[in-house]
Image 1 (tube, helix red, strand yellow):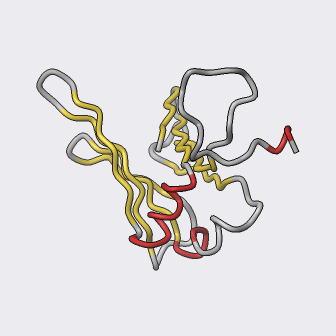
Image 2 (cartoon, rainbow, N blue to C red):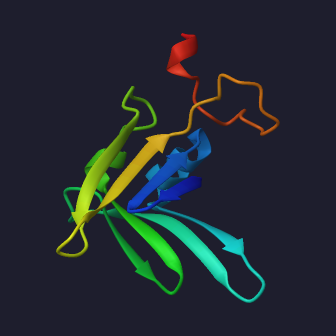
Image 3 (cartoon, helix red, strand yellow):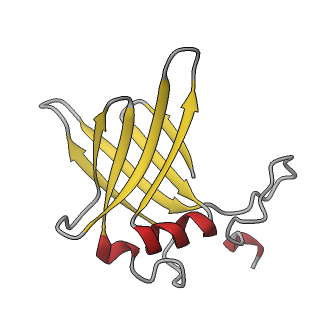
Length: 121
């Protein structure tokens, strides 16, 4: 699982294994360790929510993902899901979760667990 944060936007990109685990267990978590702290990012399945939302507690961003979005996602052609979550009076937090595709450029990163890029099909 990868994340990209830019201003008020958080994007989660999931590999095949990530989506399989999320489908099975309902939870994914990764951490980045700094000198004296940890920054976490996670996805948690919800049986009650209807759209994406997020929390930030104890140094961890948790994307809450409705169960109906997760069910069958590994097998279908849906790339991802997005939502805008109002966090204050001024602006929303943009949330996006998507399948991680293989890059079209040559990169040193292992991409064997990523989805085939639709632009190569």
